[in-house]
Amino acid sequence: MNIIKIFTDYRQFQIFILGIFSGMPLTIIYSTLSGWMRGANIDLAIITTFAFARVFYSLKFAWAPFVDQIRIPILHNLGQRKSWMCFMSAIIAVIIFSYSQCDPNISISSMYMLTIALGFASATLDVAIDAFRIDTIKKDSQSIAAANAVFGYLLGGLISGAGAFYFAEDYGWKVVFIVIASLYVVGILFMLTLQEPKLVREKFNALTLYSWKRMTIDPFGDFLKRDGAIVILLAVIFYKLGDAMLGVVATPFYMDIGFSLKEIASIVKLFGLTSMVAGAYIGGFLMYRFGHFKGLMIGGIAQSITNLSFVWLHHMGHDVNALMIAISVENIASGMGNAALVGYLSYLCNKQFSATQYALLSSASGLFSHSIVGFGGVIAKNLGWDLYFIMTIVLAIPGLCLLIYVNKKYGFTSKTT
Image 1 (tube, rainbow, N blue to C red):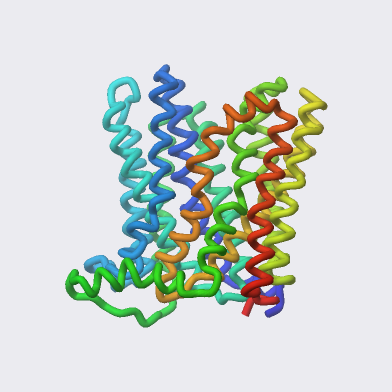
Image 2: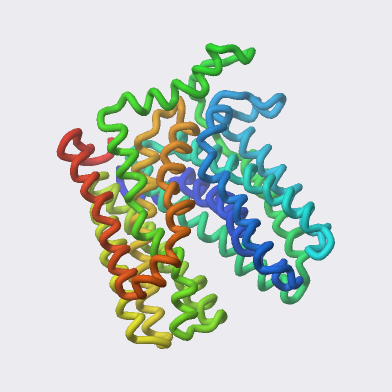
């Protein structure tokens, strides 16, 4: 397929828009709520506990089978994926609107419940959107779709993060949450216009032992039957480990060498977004042009070697130009790795079980980013910044070696088919 046709395919634009709605909730949980509560003088120890709602993103494979198979009453006429996307978006809109009725100094318990519900609903929305992308886009275009999804996801995070802070400064947090909730109403209207491909799936009229097996066990069994399934899972787990270990200490590192919060926000968050998006499209093109193995290897090597830029930045100190260079180099490489991995995971999925299998694979890829990276601060404190950043490069080696083993033992397709 001609690469120009891929970029001008309206379905690719749809994936980009869906990525925006997929990306907004996580930033709300991780950043926006923190800014709101900190401004209300809520204790930092309480604020950070809200981030536990992110755990649903690591557990979503547990209920993904229901998104694959269970039909929502009445709404199922819209389509299996559309019905779940619209339903979850409506729940998210209600939750975010409910924040506008809360006061952090009075309603902290209610906010906990809302945030837990938001974590579950947004993770489930991710399952439905990922499945829609895999079902809709042909396998030879999945890498480009992955780049579009990453771009949308990052833009969504920018809207609910930096955009929310900007609006809150002038109009207050109540208006912020009402506006974001309204965006999800617009999102539902957009989702209603989507054309969902008709895939033949087994229908279950009752919850029986057989239907439970078909929904929960068979999708995982289908994946595990493929050659090298366990090695592939391990490769997915280790592929982003070094990058995740860098990300978890990045902000404290910037502050440690003298950068202000405003400098971090403008350079790392806003300027860095363009680099990440550029990297995502480079990674998507590499996957499309050279195939899975070469695309993953190039992205994996790039995202590890470029961590050396942080060693250089450490010795440059508080230098805005040096920070811009380091962020550009690292974010382009990280974007390449993200798009390559998302494209590969999408390719691996059987469309009969796309929601369940993608949830399994993406949960595996996030395993370390939700667990072992929590020790990053302790390790950095003991090693020092230079050795820590070199360690992140070394941590990338197991994932690359596993990819080489998979290619040699079982083979990748030389080009997506």
